[in-house]
Image (cartoon, rainbow, N blue to C red):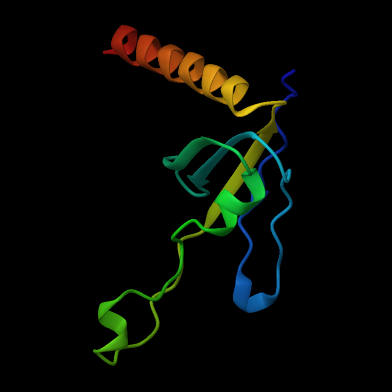
Length: 109
C-alpha cells in the first residue's frame, strides 16, 4: 500500500527547537533547496523520520572544529514524505520516479 506525498514542509532547524514531522516506518523522502527547487536528497528507507533526522545538513563541518571562522548558515531546505507499507514498495516507487525523471530529462534535451 502506497499513500500520497505530503505537502512540502520547511526542514527544521534544530537550534530553534523545531522537529521533523515524518512517518516512523518505511517510505520515501525528498529534500530540496527551497529557493531553487533543486534536489538535495532522495531515498527509499525503512524509517523515514530517522533518515531525515540523520541527513547531513549541519552548518558545522569537520574543518570548523579546527579553524575558527564565523558560522556557516545551514541551507534553506524543504522536504516531503510518502509512507509505504514495506521498504520493497518504497524502492519500487523510487525506481518508477527515477525512470520518469530520466525519461523526462532525455525528452527535454
